[in-house]
Length: 279
Image (cartoon, rainbow, N blue to C red):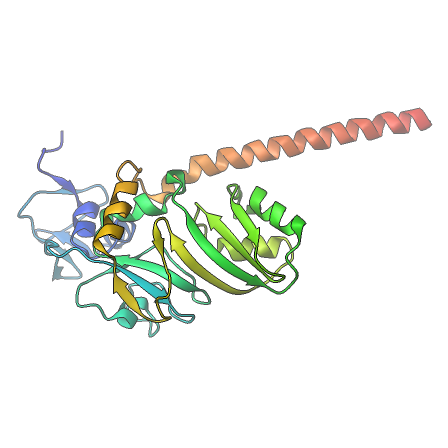
């Protein structure tokens, strides 16, 4: 039985503001984390006063709460790995150790949240919590009614079917889309499936937080009211890592495949009857 004062190691690292829980798990798996001088393992727990180090550097308690909004420019990579010249941490150059909540791929721009509180990351990102993210997308072909309908109904990518979402045409080549998922390059892959190429992609909202007129490349602290609403919105959200969605995805795929198989079987039977009738 775990001691009531103990904390999971990945949570302790995350709460310090060093990185997210998922990144902490990766560091632990790679053997880069020690507790009281001993190498740690996934699932380990720590007590108050235990000495936790990453790559030999002492992890200290996080006393300063940081939540900032960045209007990320095209060309900046959402990584905490400072070995990359275009990493977002060096770009922001914040005095506190922070990390991004989710990602915007390198060719995309717009609203990116960064924090030093790891416990909120999965609550915001996990699709099951249904937290909205809004984008303006420009494509290389005319946005048709059929395109809007199919994008909003679900597209098969990455061995799953995307969740139904809100899609609205705003000009001949632009549309607005509101997602609750965060699959890898999701919007770009959805468009590619329908024969479109994304020319420009900009995130303008995450939940209650709107990019507004924040200039490209600039960042600001969240206001007290913005942070209050954000935390209230995720208070009852599940903070399990995104890997726990595998069952949900596989179930959805299986249902889709089953419907497709039934439809194909019906078509084959109908075609067989027609052939026999002709014979």
